Structure formats: C-alpha cells, structure tokens
Length: 434
Image (cartoon, rainbow, N blue to C red; front, side, top):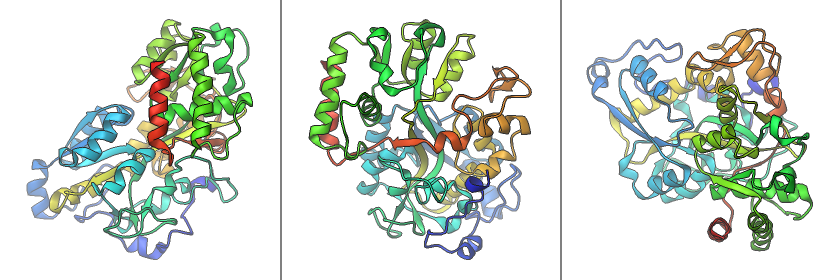
C-alpha cells in the first residue's frame, strides 16, 4: 500500500520541513501511543476542568471515543449525535452551542463561508504529512482521476488564517481535519434478490417493486439517484456532482415515476432504519452504509455490500473548530485532533468498515490479520471482531469490494452541494412528498 500510505503531499504549499518544525501539540505534550506526558503545570492543573462540546452524526460521534479521550487526554468530550441536516442547521445557526463540529465535507461547503468555523494551522498537526492524499489533492495515487461532486480537497483549505474563501490548492490553513470516509454502494439481501446484482440501475428493477429503499438526505440521495439514472442511460450528466436544473428535473422525474409505481418501500435517514429495513426483509436492495451491512450480518442474516460496475459514491468527514475557541480550550482541541489521528480511533473506525485518514498510525493499532482483511482485501485467517469484540466475519471471509485501493480507487462521485443546491433540495422534497 505504498502509494497510499507513504504519501507526503507535494503540492501543499507548505514544506515538509515547515511541517516537521510544527508543534505536534499546542500545549507541548506528546501524543501518539495513548500515553500523554510532559504537560506544563498549568495544563495539568486545569485539564480536568475542560469540557469540549462536539456535534456530529451518529456515524462518528461514538461513546467509545469520548471515553478514550477522557482516559488518554484527561478532559471531557461531550458528544451530541444528530442527522446530517440537523448538524448543518445547528453548525450554521447556533455556533456558540458547540466547540467542535464533526461534519461531512459537503456540509463544510454550506457552513464554512458563514465564518462560524476557524481555519486550522497545519503546522500544529503532527500527522498532517501522513493524511491520505485524496484529502490533499483529490487523488488516491498520482495517476488517479478526481471524482465528481464535492471532493474533500475542494473545500479542505482556505486562503488564509482569517479567510472563509476556499483555496484552489493546499495552504497552511485547513477547514477540517479529515477523520472518516468510505466508498458507498448498494446493500442487498442475496438470499432474496434472486439474481446477481451488478449495476446501480438494479435499484429500479421492477422485480424489486415494493422492496427497494433510497437514502433520504438530499445531498447524498441525489447522488445515488444520479448513479442509477446514468447507469440506466436515462440521463447524461455534464457533471453529476453539479447538476443543472434540467438534469435535476430529469433525475427526480425518473425517481418520482418509480415511486408512484410502488418501487420504494421506504426512504431512510438513520443507520438504524436501514438496518431494520434490511434485517426484516421489508427491503432487499437499498442505499446503505458499510457498517449497516455488517450490523445485519451480525444478526446472522445474509447481507452484501455489492460492488457495482459503475463504481462507488464516496463521502468523507472531519473535525472543525468553532470560531469562538481560544486559549486552553483551543489548545485542548488541537490535542484532541492530534490524538484522533494517532491511531487508536483510526483502528476503531477501520474495524467498523470505514477508513481512517492516517493509515500508518491505524495499522499500528490493528493485528496483521485485521489489516489484511479490512485494508488489503485478503481472506480472514481468524474470526474478525467488531470494536466491541463481537464476531463480525468468520475466518475465511473476504471484505465486500476488496482492498482499500480497489474501493477508494473506483470512486465515481462524492456527496455534493451543487450551485443549484436550493433548487435541488426543493425538488427532492417534492419527490419525497409526491
């Protein structure tokens, strides 16, 4: 995996020497192995009194992370889990109600221009030069194509310390520190679909009438819909990540016709909804997230995250710091970010089927067999366990979609905020209400 993991970006505008001179921790602590030493007296005396409030989706606002922060760093991380739309609204309209926003990159395009999030100095990030290059320049490898949609690197940097304008190339000032991402596809019940599934267009196969489901978050669902329509040959997009009004209308007209014909059993918003729909057999093909597929399989129910010939829809998230953070709280926030990229959380996320932003450090916290299964697409030599120690896959299993490079290397688009976003959201809501 040398192409992906070696990857000190070469086009950042920030020299490797400058990065290595950076303060790996703003308060002068050592972070990385979970052992935190060297706190200045003032820090040691006051750290236990600090509480950082984090908002985000349930995907990455995990109690286990908050517990580990308390154990390793000494302060309290108070998490509030919301759905994507609620995170967007709260981040933009209630900036004093949180200290850290754990948000997706398409959400950054909506809220960062509002000036509620402060740019982060990459000189303070210990593992910046190990972040997967897809977040720096949009390419998994030097020869990779840049996928359509709101690719993380397009909203990953701003022009200066006090800027709210996204930079066209990497700078010293980052909007979000990438933490979690994945390449999404359709989940299926292989025992119930009755035939091989190979294309996004299979979601609208009349054979699955009343047994299909679509994700109801506009900026994500529209991309799944576009993948379906493009695979059908029904719509030809100039850029499906930034559709014209005409392309939006065509896409949602097809989805509305299918809905009125009874194709969809439901439109889900939460992880648990998708798991319940698939586990019950009410739905046998749907938009899905990798850990949701794993959750269904953990119940002993067949479920596959099906690779499709047109590729994957990707998404990514990261941590942003509220504008009001200063002083010791800001120092603590940088400590948290450096800790987040130091390996323990990365391994935790990898074991759920997601990917970590710094692969090297996550690998150090995983067994050789875990790494081979989750990241290299190799058959498991032993049972694969969840972060909680439950059996997720039996020995001999192979991860759906194969290796990290096979999955992230076949990304066709990212979740997107389009120029016609308001129009798209209005038309999407009309589709859902139709």
